[in-house]
Image 1 (cartoon, rainbow, N blue to C red):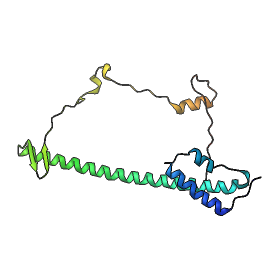
Image 2: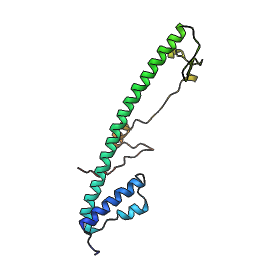
Image 3: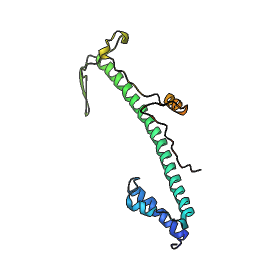
Image 4: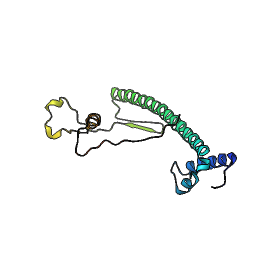
Length: 164
């Protein structure tokens, strides 16, 4: 049996592991893997340390997801404002018959482009229709659970750690 590690040492190691993971961009390098090595003597303490690290990064990920949603809302508001203001200025330029305008450091003008407009999709020939196929995994899972043998598919059991 090896030497027991103190709580202070484990706490310091915990901080070092967090720093190393952050420096590695979330990757588990061989060096970090070595730092994470577990032995019987300190398993429970290390398990607690792992749970703390997992909890920290779970909260970090949730916060990032919330900030991402907030940024997406701000982006949508900004894009809508830009769209509406462009519509208003274009309408005014057309009304005053101004194809090009220079105001301050900005040049406003119209660009002509083409876009396909579908007026009746039912009348479009099949050569222009794309069909996407995908596997119905829910139905496939049910059949496999009920013993149906489906070539090309098996029911795989996964096991994941829960931390509460």
